[in-house]
Amino acid sequence: MPLDAECLFCKIIEGNIPADIVYRDENVVAFRDISPKAPTHVLIIPTVHVENVAELAKMSSVITASLFSAAKEIADSEGLDGYRTVFNTGASAGQSVFHAHMHLLGGRPLTWPPG
Ligand code: DGP
Image (tube, rainbow, N blue to C red):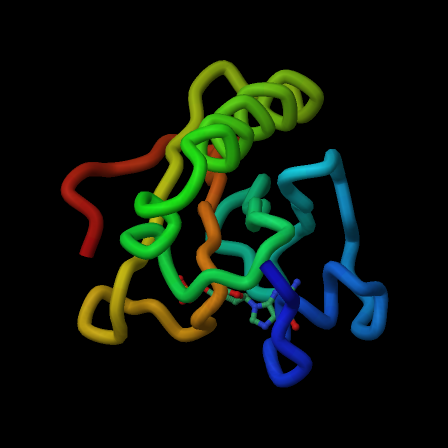
């Protein structure tokens, strides 16, 4: 599936916008959030342009699995003993960038429920 020339995260995948990339494989790219909400706050995104995780669920489950296996690998490399993964899906849930992304948060106690 092609990248979207207008999409911020597609531009990061292509290297046209700089980002602090911490992990990359054929299915996903991960980089530090520009506005971190925890000591570790990494965004893990598919290397195909897809609007949100609901749309991603219609595609190959290999990509979805890669998001979660990357999260585990990054959490280990960051030395996290626990971590939270979040997908905001739709503007009403707080999604502001419409390229599916997993938030990986850790490095401090995380309260529940989230706001
Ligand atoms: P969400 O609100 O769930 O769509 O999360 C989008 C996240 O993307 C938000 O936490 C801030 C982050 N973000 C927005 N623009 C940039 C950027 O240019 N670079 C990086 N690294 N992160 C960005």
